[in-house]
Structure formats: C-alpha cells, structure tokens
Length: 320
Image (cartoon, rainbow, N blue to C red):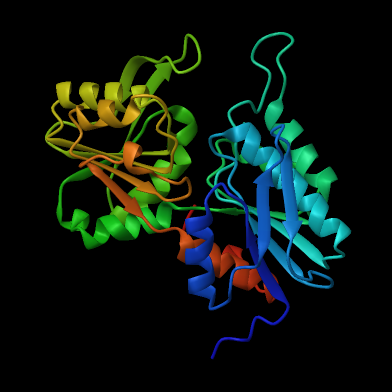
C-alpha cells in the first residue's frame, strides 16, 4: 500500500498544464489553484489562490516555446511561493530551455544554461527535477539538488511491446555525445549500436561526415534528446537508407519541432517518429508518423519519491 502524500501540493504554470493534470491523476492529488495571467503591458502576473505555508510545493513548468515567457513565469511563481512560506519548492522542468548553450565555443559567448540555473536557484527553488538534459554537466550548474530523469526506458519498453526484440535492429546515435544514451537503449533491445559522425558549421545546420557501424539490412532506431528543426535526423535517416538500412525510426524525448519540422519529418524516409509529451504538441505539430508517449507516470513517480524521501535513482537501476 502506497504511503499518503499529505502536505504535497502541485501547481502548474501555463507552459504545459495538460501534463500537470496527468501527473496529478497519476498521484491521486488535485492541482493547486493559481492564477497566471499578464498585465496590460505584458508583464507576468501570478497569484497563488490557496495557502502554501509549510507545504511541499512542486511547480510543473517546462521552459519550452515561448521560452522567455515561460522562464519568466517560472521565476515569478518561485518568488510567489517563497514569499508564501512554502516548506520546500521543487521545480519540475520536463524540458530545460537554453540547455544547448552549455559551454563557450567562440570568444565572448555566454553560457546561458548556467545563467538559467542561477536564476532558478536565486528565485527560491530548493530542488529541480528535469529529464534528458542536452548535456549532463548542466546538473553541476546548480547549487541545489537536481534529479535527472531518463525517458529512454519508456521509449525502450514501447519498442519492446512493438516487437523490436524479434527484429534485426541496430540503435543509432546521431552524434558522438549521444553514445551513452544509444548504448543503454541497445542493451534494452539486445541490439548493436552505430554512430553518425557529423559537424555543425552553424546552429541548426549539420554536415554528416561518416557512419560508424554496420547498418546494412537492418532496422535502424535513432535516439536523441530532442528534435528541433529535424535537419539532423532527416539527413541521418537518408544516409542510413543509402547505406542499406531497411527502415529508419527516430525517437527523442523532447519534440521541439520548430518551423516546418513536422512537415519535414512527415516527408522524410523515416517510418515513425517517437517522442515524449514533455513539450505540449498542438494540432500544428502533429503528423501521421508521430507517436507520442506519456511522461506523466515517470514524473509522477519521481515526485512521489521526492516527497516521501525515497530514492529516485532506483527508477533507473538498469539504465546507463
């Protein structure tokens, strides 16, 4: 029998309220009452409509598009709960915006991922829960505890249910940095891995240099943390097919899908694109090849364990 969640209060900003509702359904709690609007001049207005004094507060707010509005709303919410005397404030960020600016590449560039971490900490967060950061070192940008969740097991279990274990599969990392993620999925599917070596001459542009590994005659499963414009996975899929792959499936945690990415993915050689619902996907971002998997059970279980002071890492004992 599960222990009661007394003292837990879960609130949502405007970034992904549907996900927050699904998390509350999983936990068996209600969503807290809060008003999030804008003043006439565009400034963020937040009003907590119930007492939070002494509560263990969780705020669900991915910093997805519009990134700056959602980030500012999160900071204002944190300040509101800090001043409302919440016992602990945990930010649940299914998607961490600005994560790709995690290091200096050129002179006089900012490290915006660190700046965002500082802002969240200074605004009053006591803990952060996030999922599949673009770079693992971002956890070290915070001076507060960070629970880094992985969507890979959810994607892997879906593929097992679809019969991938009985097929001739190879898991493909779209770059060298994603090899640990690809290796973990490959172990779930009992499959070998391949790597796409590429370079980025500028943001959102990619040149594929080489494919390392045997993909001929195999069903290729590409896995990444996010799909933004879709350029990388589309070009990668084309190169895999040219190397003799029989089929290409793309999977990722965060479906950013900027611009005409949905149409580009639909028109590509890929047979399916598997994503999580960490970012809200309206009608304009959905397309026939898209499969959306639920993340609410993952975040709900992490929230339950944090509230009850149980281990979160045990959720991923066999991952990585």
